[in-house]
Each structure stands twice: as C-alpha cells, then as structure tokens.
Image (spheres, rainbow, N blue to C red):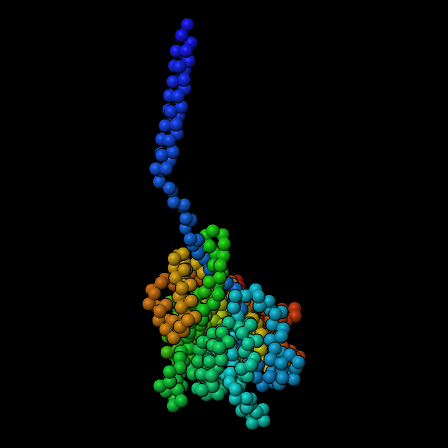
Length: 407
C-alpha cells in the first residue's frame, strides 16, 4: 500500500534533479558567454582619392584704371561697375579664374596723360574686394605692372594678399632689369614663375567628392621690349619638370590679328620645356591658336577688362576654359593636397618644399573651350553675343586647334 508514496517521492527527486541540471547548464552557458571576448567593431578604411578634376577660366588683359575708372566713378555702381556683368560667364561653374593684371594697385591716384603720352597706369585698391569675387590669381609679368616702381609693385602684392588674390610673374624681364639700381639686393621675390594653389574637386573611391587644393606652376614671359632672358626660360623648364605648369606670356605685336614667327618659336619652346599650355596676352586683340605636340597655344586672348574702344577688336577677348583631370597614386594625391595647403600658408619656400618632396609629377589631361567676351559700348565686361562667338572662334582657328590636341 506504500508503493505510490515511494513512486511519488522518486518523481519529486527526479524533477528536482532535472531542475538542477537545467540551472547548472544555464549558469554554465552564461559563464561561457561572459568569457567570450568582445569583438571590436570593424572600422572601414578611409576613402581614397581616385582623381582630381577642375574647371578653370584663363582671361586676358585686365585693369580698371584710366577711362574704366572714370566710367565707374560716374556710375551708381561705383567700384562694382566693371565687374557688374561678369556673372554672364557663370563664375560659379569654375573653381578658379586667372587673368593678367596690367596695372599696379596703389593709392597714388591716376597720372596717365593722353596729351603727354605718359603711360604710367594705376588701379585703385578699393576695386579689389569686388575683383576677389571672381579672380583667384593675377599675372604681374607685363609692361605696366611696374609703372609705379618697385615700391608700387610691393604695394600691389600687399593689396592682393590682403584680398586673398594670389599672383605670379614680374615686370622685370631680364637679369639686367632685375639688377638695376632700384631692384638690386631687394628682398622681393621677382621670379617669373610661381606656385599658384587652385581648388580641385577630388573623387573618392566611396563615390563621394570633396574640395581639395593643388599647387600648379604659373609662369610669365614678359617680352614686350625684347625676348625673355635665358634664365626666365630655364625657370619655366625647372617648374614644368616638377609640377603641372601653365605659361601666360605678355608678348606680341599690338593690334596684329595673326601671331608672328618670333612668338611661335618662343611659345613652342615653352611646350618643349614641358608646359601644359601657353595662353598669351598683350596685343590687345584676339589672335589665332594652334595645337603643338598635342598642347594648346593661344597667341593672344585679347582685352578681357580694358578701356579701349577705338575699333571693334579691342573690346573683345577669348576667355579660355580649361578642364583638367589629375591622376596619380591615391597617397600621392593626398600629399599634393598637403603641399598645396602648405603653399597657401608659406609662399616663400613653397616650390623648394615641393621639389624636396620628390613626388612623381602627376598626369594631367586637359580639354578646352572658349567664350567670347566684350566690353563694347560701356566698358563692362560680359559674355558676347553669337556673332562675336562665331567671329572669335574663326579668329582662333578653334576647330583645327581642337583636332590637334591630345585625345
């Protein structure tokens, strides 16, 4: 009669044992889970630069002195006057504009005399904040940037720096010029080449883009009163061996529509030295262009912002659009950006630091277009109409030139 009680007792014991086993197993599992090392989260690698791209506009003779200044001062727009229609050229589509500033920027006032033929220009500095909205860098290697002497050149550079505008080139074109009494032993940098740091759009391997900086070589070749000295030409060669380099000569016969043999020989030599392109001004009218060894030479882009109005040619220009793709190793492109940032902080030793870095010169691929401009009628630079676009294209011999450029 006691067997049910015994069986019941055994059942209780078995249930209790099973519960203990479950609890022990659970505790063991918990301990095992707690003993497992925590896996560190996987950090994705930093995105790498695959290439750099940019769109630049190279423009011709620019100044706001003399009669342009008179028109501006008489206008309600004031110092905004000569720049007031530049947005017709779609400035926001470009990373940078580079032009030739053909006057010193000082507080000396305007001492040009038509009657006495005194060709000493000056541009007032209060125009510069407006100019800085459009121009990234100015060429100073021309026959008027030194019109106010060495002190005027120093002042010009100071004003440009204060307004965030870079510059390159010198109005002194030969060794003899640079060693004259005024310039001798002067601390001012008077090289014809300089580093200009331009914005670029960097493509990343994750599909994103970001804006970076890239240092280009820009060289002048002031040859209005003769041929640029051999040291100037060798300076171009040394820059082009290290970094992508653009030469913007200030040479040629004024008001002549076709280039001459002297300029052709010199400009082709710059390409032989390794320049990416040669884009010239000074003749005050648009001249032809050519492709030489697959590179662009424009013999004169004419007057971009100038006050001459005595014929249909002088208010017109060809603004040259340059689209560039820069390729190199990802780490090297990062390093080029660092060098560019460094050059913005310290211009004086910039090229030396680039040379010391011993990076391979990146590969550049350029494509080009042109945009005709005019300031006819009111001395306000703007995009020209279709008739001028066609006429300027014919003057440039543009279709033939494009067919000879590197594909």
